[in-house]
Image (spheres, helix red, strand yellow):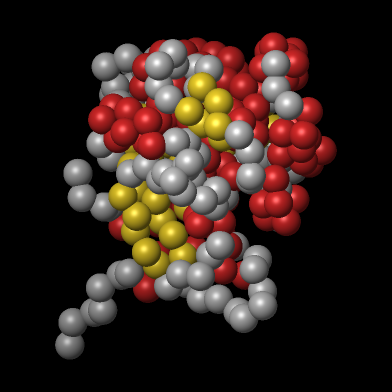
Length: 260
């Protein structure tokens, strides 16, 4: 399936933005046709086994997330098209977590044999894994299409979540992923298994954004297909190239020029 610019701009970008808004706005703006099913809420008790089995130094990423809010995203539903929409947020500023990306790779807990993934990103997903499954099962019954998105750290969580959803939550309905500014999430083995399972995965990457360049290969490898945009950047300003609004500007520049 080719890259769908209208889907990326009018659905995935809006949903990724709403995944941040819902921390403070109970009814965030959603893409046309979608209604909120519910927020994705962290459950530290559900993540406790993974937390206890991990290096405490790798708890910092999820700690940053929890300090901002226990809401990590949202699930929405389009009744007319039987489409579930799942969006994950990142942290408010990339400096909260980008220094912590040098983590060991560990086996992916949600799907046995899937490969190695970033420990810190996995701990974030373990806090919401059960809640995502519950919301989708209860509020998106009969889904014929599943869309998954996320920005920044949320892009990494979207990759982990997309694989889990395909295997354990919506068997027979393979999610479609459009992520924005996402870092590398897993090792070559995980990337190969992910690409085999999920053929539609577009990683939207703004020129000069540093986040999609970490963690470094060869231990970590990107999934899906990159879509490069040129939303803008400022010398010596790491954050500007990473902002969601900068990504929107980049997507808008992909629109074909009007005819004469």
